[in-house]
Image (cartoon, rainbow, N blue to C red; front, side, top):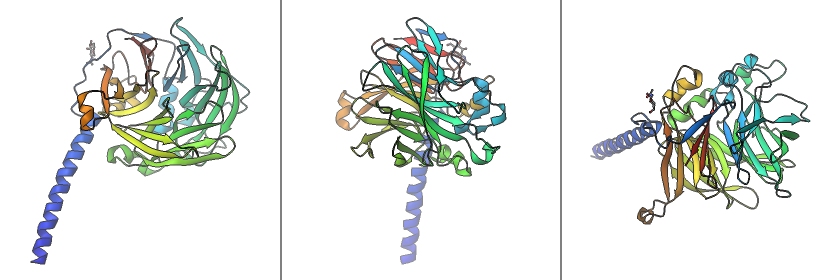
Length: 389
Ligand SMILES: *[C@@H]1O[C@H](CO)[C@@H](O)[C@H](O)[C@H]1NC(C)=O
């Protein structure tokens, strides 16, 4: 009898587990875009700006409307993008990776020159640009740099020699003065950064658990929580402040001191900064697609680049010239509708979507709410997309 009861109990458990698994698998595949119809959304008043290539990250300087972009060449990205396990270091061309400034009012593009950096290896990825608290015309640049390893070390064995560079620049200027390189065992797979206005400290995401290792490939398909957020101070070094996050990519600071982390596993995770610079987990906002870089616009709404098709993008990353893959941008705002009474605190809208022929997969989507313009660029994109609202 006991055995039979146990059998029934197990059968019920298995049934519930199976149903749960099916639900969760269905939802995972749905978010990855398996059944998504790609309609073009919000693409009417958009134009392409040439002369900026393979820019993973866009940061808006709100007062001037100037964009700062972390750019490369598509060839360099195909050969060397450690986050995607592209580790053909010997094919990397120096001088392709750079920080660019783009002024939409004049259409002027400036390739910023770097001064004072002895180690000239630069392979850019995520970035933050923060007006100085001392003088707002001064800017602190925090730049993820996936350096090619030295001393003949094989990157397929050891991964990238990743660091964060701190530079100082000025609004409208064309020179970045190198200040410091931050290295740490905790800063192993940096993806994006959110810097302080004093040039002294920043938060960063690690987009994987280690530079190399077989479990790297499993985090997206299995939904593993093996990424993290860390904090570095120029005098104190680095430490992990939020471990075990799901596929953390972009990170940004909101005006109220909340930080938002965007996940390729279709979520935005809010983190609340404490006085000792540790973080407390806040809201988790569910999205309908994988997200990459994230921004809080001046009007308070959250913008993020989204991947409408998580399957095609795998082949696009390997062959960006041969594969057409869709792009999108989402807006997340505080829900003021009646549904907010039923616990829906945030509202997610797809504000831009393209089948990939006009705008290739965006890894950064930034909104200038003063000038009502949306900007999109991507790690393998041939051009910047500018949309007037
Ligand atoms: C993508 O959309 C454009 C504009 O609507 C259309 O002309 C084109 O045929 C579409 N391409 C694909 C591959 O669906």
